[in-house]
Image (tube, rainbow, N blue to C red; front, side, top):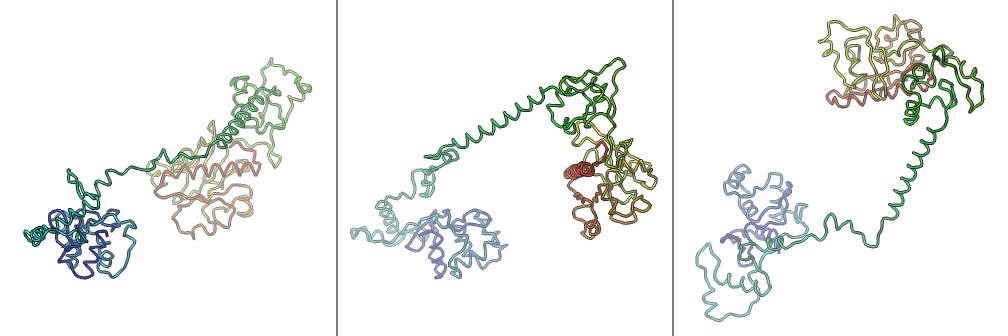
Length: 467
């Protein structure tokens, strides 16, 4: 029987006066004895097991206020029963509940019975065993019976170093499995996994070889629009091919723009003569004459960088004060903080997009669309909205439906703001971006989400602008 069950039995029958501490052991009448510091089966909510000595002290002082009990236990250097464990532990020891989740399924300590049928002793031994030397020491008879039980059962309560039975057992314990032996799988092999990985490596190698073959194929005259010219510069290997064969200076002279499907115009040298394309067999005149790119509406590509409209109000989350930091670096700075370092509010802000681009792309951030010309409106690619209809007053559009069918709309808000502020915007064809008020490391995620939405919008609407 374990120490916790014995202590509960003596507590239920109100027999704690027969639980005595003799030396380093607790004697429960003449039935059991346990080391005073042995761990019981009751585990604290903090994770540790309560010792027998701490539980005996607790059950004897259960009527004392918890603060006084803590002071007394701390003075005796005993393990303290926490306030959360106090009530369930007391109910269990007093027999009010039969079990609790805090009790280990396997007992952690085993007591040594003191009364059991033993070989009869000689009369003189019986006489010597009767009585006790003093009130705090076990009788000679009890010690002799304990020694006999230990010898008969093959149990050694302690060795020469003074270790208890539990300590000796734990010293001799060895792990059956460790982190390496558990990986040993008998009658198993990993041939299937190796074959799968090898297959993936072969597919990757074939794909790389295919890219190299495509790069080594002869190409048409630079500047000639082809069926796959729109995606010619997407592949890194093809970029490298053009750079190695033409060089940076030659590409510029020929009018090749890597960000476009073909050049706006060809600017050959005065003495440069186009060579016929022997691979296709077409005369050189067909390769030289081509029209400039047209937008979906049939107009020429607008002159100037794309425009992003932000609100002009100073109390908005994003305006010309803090637009540069947000769009270029992905860092949000409150407008009022930024305004302190500037003497005048900027009307037009020039930024250079670096996110998702090998080379910076120029943009204009403007907040006064009422003065835009028709050519300016052709360059507008995104609008940051306030959620108010009056923002679109005097704009050359019928209503907000027509606006956001042609231009990307963005509504910027803090993620913990009230939902009512975005109720009206949810009815519009706009993208809602949320920022955290305190987690500044998440600002870049919102900025990348904006640029990603802008790329998809320009591509789907076939706008003829460089983004």
